[in-house]
Image (cartoon, rainbow, N blue to C red; front, side, top):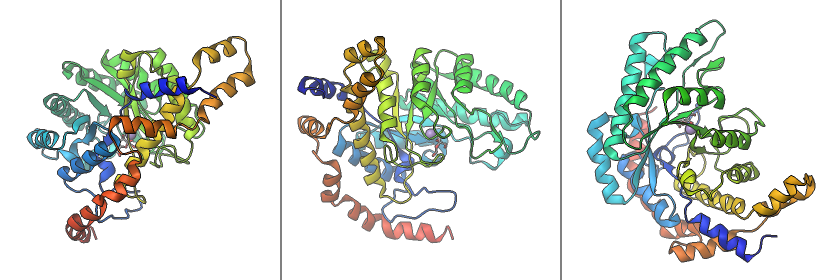
Length: 395
Ligand code: PSV
Ligand code: MN
């Protein structure tokens, strides 16, 4: 079992671990079959910032909120001053900027890969102004996910679409300024069910390399085939200098958007184990973000629960005895090496985390603090009747 010193070391590493929350995690989102609406769900951008500020106050480790351009800045660049005001008011930074290339009716056959050059150009312009939004708000990362693909064999030229995508990404990359980065997210299927233009980490890696040095790959843990070895992908991306960050969520079947660690906490532990938190510069290059929508659980509650789980699993991965593990691996001591890893996984880091929170001046039990704050009941009262009116207009 790791000793007290190893646990203390783990706590030091925790100081550098932060995680970004998604604005859409506070809003009424659901599955394609429907939404179970919540009275307290955030509708306005200000409400999303207010909820994110509470998560920050209760956990101390979520300094930024990811923004989705069409959902949060529907007026594009004109929305920037309002975001800047909310950043100032709530003390939560604007995090990664997510262009939206999947909502417009024009995108039925794709966005940057659409066979129609005019639609490709309009999609490109949307990304370029998203880059500009990011620049004005001082955001480092633009997270690009395309829903592009096709549903039937022969319906689209896969080859032509690769070329169009490469051309577009080059232009997007050349618009990046300062320390900005382009994170390219892959997904094997959904909404397209025959081919997806950026289906896996190999395609995303190639596209990042072809686009330029400020492009990297974004790993969404829900975007893999069943039983794929995600930690191996992470190790490869680190080796190639291409790991840009994560969209964390858990899944049982496909892109289920379940809360982190709810199904397979050992997997997230194994992913964290591959990321050496000892190299500060490299560690800072990895953006840890949640990408979950909560259809059943309370939104703020689920977000806090996910943050806690991320910290627990990160702390567990940090107590691995690396020098002993290296010796055992060299000596090919299979069972001992595996047990060395498992010992860290089964270490109860929760008391140490409680002490760490105490030192940081945040509640020892953030979920209990949320319940005791009465915040959810308050926003249900404040937002409930307005949300009910909005909801009746969905019908
Ligand atoms: C697509 O499934 C995705 O993971 C992308 O990151 C989108 O931006 C996000 O979900 C929208 O919920
Ligand atoms: Mn994602």
